[in-house]
Image 1 (cartoon, one colour):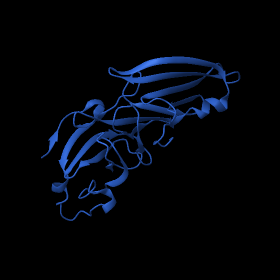
Image 2 (cartoon, rainbow, N blue to C red):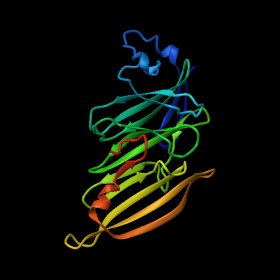
Image 3 (cartoon, rainbow, N blue to C red):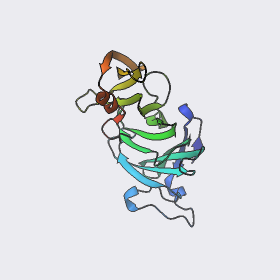
Image 4 (cartoon, rainbow, N blue to C red):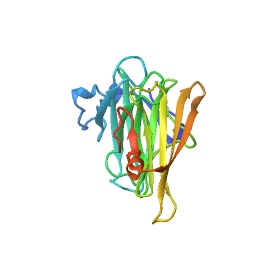
Length: 234
């Protein structure tokens, strides 16, 4: 059985029968390690294993990318085998993305089940990511804390943006660290803001915020990217 529907944040969730997909002729099967998550799907690669739907079992996670490296338009499909014979899948468009969109699997909101993070689009130095989470029997977008859906990171001469979660933090706690240069080119100094969020029954809630000024260049640059267990930094 196949069902489709429009998901939040541009993701379109799809539920597919894995056994039916494996009957496609002429398409090489994935390795046994993939537990069938990529069977019969050209270009699919097994990326990781993790408990996505929160049932206590490790799920096989696959990814398919369409479009040339750095192309203005492309797409990425994430596939998760949640139980024998059933694969959940979600699709989103990509733009100007270089390299693999895969960023990793991590616990972001503190609920049962891990989130999958994938690159969506990139500017000159800013990168925009989407996080997939399990809700009501399917994959959907987990919006970033604050305004907007994308998880934004940056690392340039005048700006540094990142997300931080320490292993000692309580589940569902994450910090957005944002540093920008102020002043003219000669006398500029970094000003940084750390905003802490906690996941609650109503979503992300801001629990603390502090400003650091002036701050050392090295400190500002160290903020950029993901610093969350399970995710690549860039």
